[in-house]
Image (cartoon, rainbow, N blue to C red; front, side, top):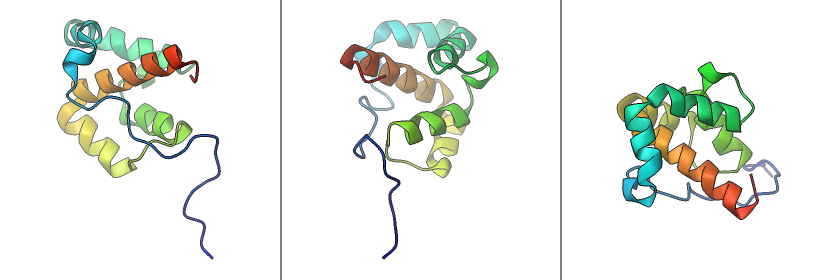
Length: 104
């Protein structure tokens, strides 16, 4: 029997908001639009990483793996290449929601 999922405490899921759900948190989207680097540093700080890591697809992959969110390195790469701002805002929204739920 082949193991297809790593054991973990989180059931497989998707991000809690869609990639283009800007209206779910306009503040985060404005923050990203006007100070993209600062938003990346905020994400990196939330995840106890170096500020330079916050805007890279790898932080999305680490986050996805930690919370067992569906996706792959390929989709992370494509999402960040073609929609970096959207992907970064989506990640921050998800972090904030998990903090509210007490599971971050």
